[in-house]
Image 1: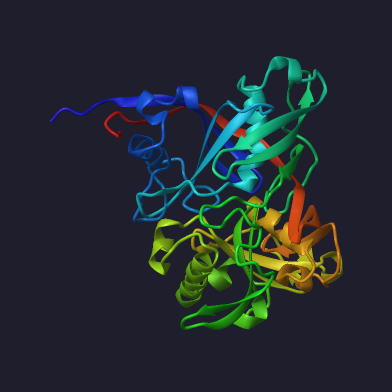
Image 2: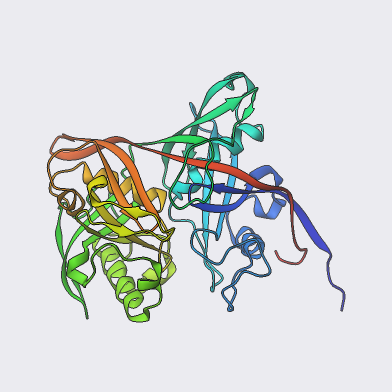
Length: 396
């Protein structure tokens, strides 16, 4: 039997925030994979090494976690006043599935630097020294992200002293502005609160009726109170990820929240929409020891938040979920706002498993509806490797 040789595709392996993934220019992909569909998905699954029943991604570039099983496709923007179009694919670890339903806020920090370094931003817009402003069209959710990328001697500056909890080494700071972050999700009517309420009673079979804030901002997220499900909000990964009953409970909450948000029609559809919505639990400020050994002092934070991604407790905090946290915190009466002490606020610092993070958002009411014009946070990004990805030629 004859086997096709491997093909090689130009690619860059990058860290963005507390995630990492494989970045491609659209024009560099094989022709069949330059448009959405089975050929593209098959290629990217093979790049990552999924599906992997061993849960290791040994035969691919993935890291077998939700934070490291990621792909990005970038191209010069076709939209006015934007530099680059950004498409994100969350790759399942153990099933042949890529979820294109949401954004990755952490990898958003790497989009601007990649775009500058790979000729996707007009050279006249890049200073010799200073900050390049890159306007990104996030194609998954139809939103604008503005990245402020540090430039030294005409090139992206990647090294620096900015420290981000959840990332081992410091790097250069990339500030991100998520413009009009209320996500326009199919079935959710484009509303920040698709149920029309800041807090709902969410009936979850086998769990009970939970107070929940369900918000479309950054990424659709279902927030619940930690104490209502027997937690403190200071848990680390092992406390949740080593407990199959807990993971099953969170998935049930997520699925029923998705139905209430109008993202799916039936609970069983949640299995085919793994990336969204997220589910997170919140509590008031409390001290704890982070996964790095760092002591988090209750006096230095406004609240604690833990969030699940792709069925597991995240090791830090998804960037898009941080946007949801900042947005919800800015709106008096949400569970996030109440956990932070209530009242009006333009920024919060919250504790997550790896440490702390500050995110800002300004909310106002227009015509009786809550509106947030932008959410702001800082991340960092760095190229880890660049060259060619190799995959078997018969993959598509």
